[in-house]
Length: 86
Image 1: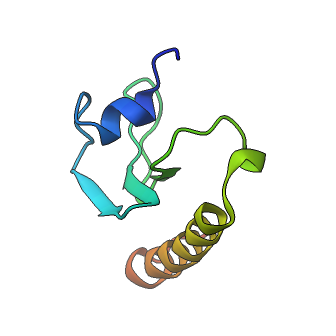
Image 2: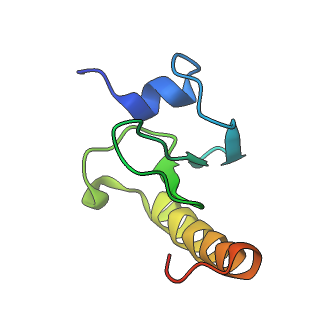
């Protein structure tokens, strides 16, 4: 498999900016940062722990965990940071 930034981040080869926000057996959340792009407050990366190439490759458990997590993170960003959209 070619290098994968997200897999490298989860395995400690590329430390995430600010550390992991949330992690369990199925999903991993970190701040998203690209020094060549503008930085936005609350810009997050939600990833599966297992490397997948397409959404269609997700297991039912992974898809459910991602959906629940994105919903909860979106509510938290709106409540804490008053973001316009998530």
